[in-house]
Image 1: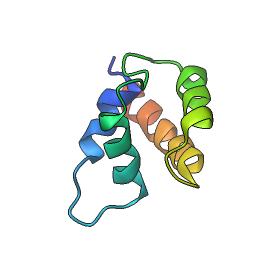
Image 2: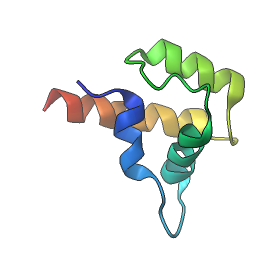
Image 3: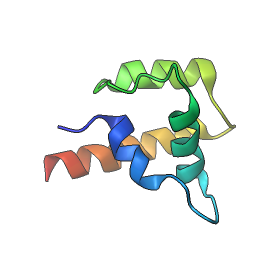
Image 4: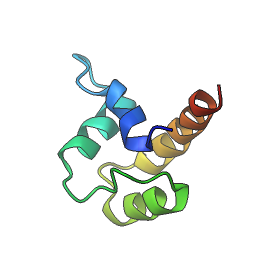
Length: 73
C-alpha cells in the first residue's frame, strides 16, 4: 500500500499549477510532512497546523478520497 505522500507525488510539477499540484509541491518541499503516514488523522492534523494555503484542507479531503479509491482498486 502506498502512502498518501506517494500518491500525491503524481500531482507535482504541473506547468499550470492547480490546487492539487500546489498541495503536492508543498508536501514535497516540507521536510517535516509525515511522508510515511497512512493515517488520515495524522496528515489532517499536520495540515491543520501548517496549512500552506486557504483551502488546503478541502483539497486534502478530496485527494484523500481519491487516494482511498485508488488503493482499494
